[in-house]
Image (cartoon, rainbow, N blue to C red; front, side, top):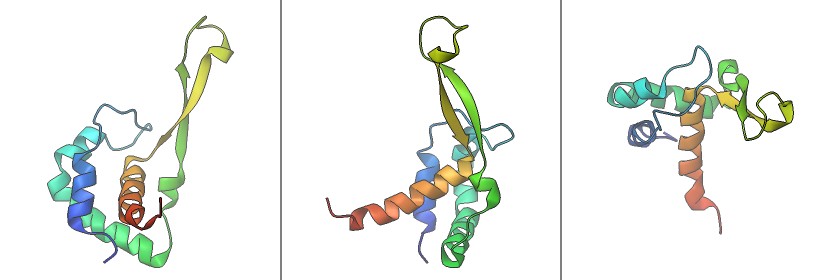
Length: 106
């Protein structure tokens, strides 16, 4: 298998439970709390995704939210956009990154 249950479990337990999430998305708090129970299923899902070279359409969707920087709150220029992605997609991306990073030559 490309990814292991230990890798997925570690990434889940390292999630920042206070990070913003997309509307109607799984809470990072829940993913972190139930990491032990979810890691095996997510590992299978992630490995199938890697072996089939496909990614769920739901993982590609994002929600853009404005974040206030400073100054007048009524001025649109004082906001910056952030993309809120699916938490499972973020976990998948992190697992892939952690797996490939050791092979990248600095």
